[in-house]
Image (cartoon, rainbow, N blue to C red; front, side, top):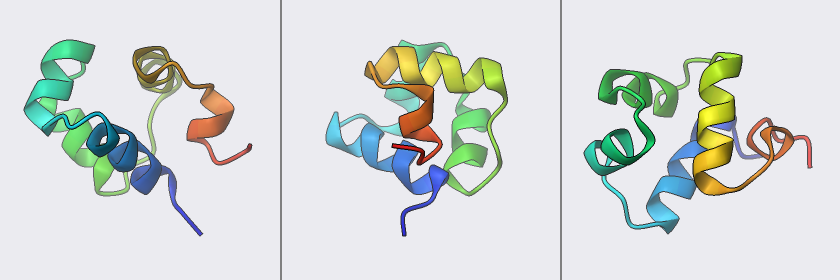
Length: 65
């Protein structure tokens, strides 16, 4: 089963973005993105930013759909 970290990483890769490009475009720090992709749990604010950036639901990011 996919993890939240894997889902976030896969969305970034599907858009052919490097971590640095994703950071710049989403205005989420590169350090935060790196931590998230290694398994750190995202805050609600970060979840909303990622969901908005990729046009997906927070439920999708949290593996609830």
